[in-house]
Length: 337
Image 1 (cartoon, rainbow, N blue to C red):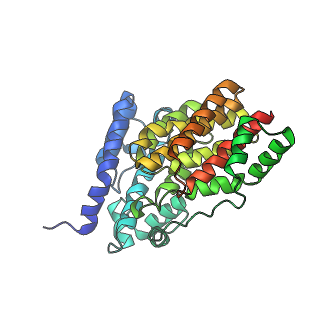
Image 2: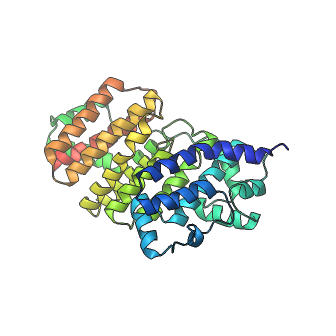
Image 3: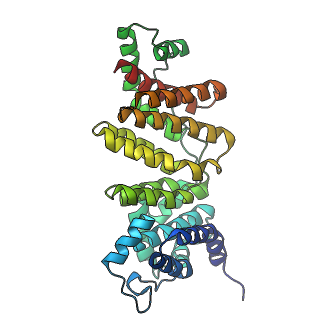
């Protein structure tokens, strides 16, 4: 008997995901590894229940806490994220498979239950998500107040009088929101099958933002392998900048989480995109050092980012003006301090 297209596509999409679950299992303690083994075997089983995952073993609060500490998510949140990732990639890859069939393929007995969970997870209905994932990403606007390169370089080198340097820092400061917006939109249009990733990133952050630092680190180490685009890195960079406006230590901590995304991400990007991400990684590392009072380390990271910009600048790529402004904003603030 021939398999239906939904089953075939689901198996193809879930293959990489199951490999990541095996990797998590290999790093986990014995009890958590047992739970992950059940999730690997029964991820798409509609009868899967956390309380009965291990026959004869009570899934109590302590075991759930241990799972959360090692993996970064509760067992059910982990299962839900895996299912929603598979569903999102299925919805984005084809318009021929009905939404209800995608839902049953990933473990939901009724269209209503699948739609409810998917909308809670993505803030979009499955149909809205499919429609949106088929559209091209918006082109980022250029910054409204591009500074001349010689102005930026003179400000960075400290060659300008304090009043002029302060004026440039002010102009850069007014552009900060647009700098972040431009940078997040500056990559090429996200492929349809990867349009689920910004939503995945928001949900990872929602689950870990109030967790202890060790749990956050475990989550990022585990979850960053799921991303093919810089979505999680971008979100954490943005959160670190926002948090740092009120709490330097928290801003530096989130910057560290952003940098943890890089090893799993760089090999998946094209050379120009990897270069852009590495430049911003150096900028964010410098900002973290600046917030911790490690001024020499901050200057070293900013210097490396500046040299990389000089060597690899591509005038046609919209990321570079935003990166240059972001670097100069933080560098100018450091100089003025």
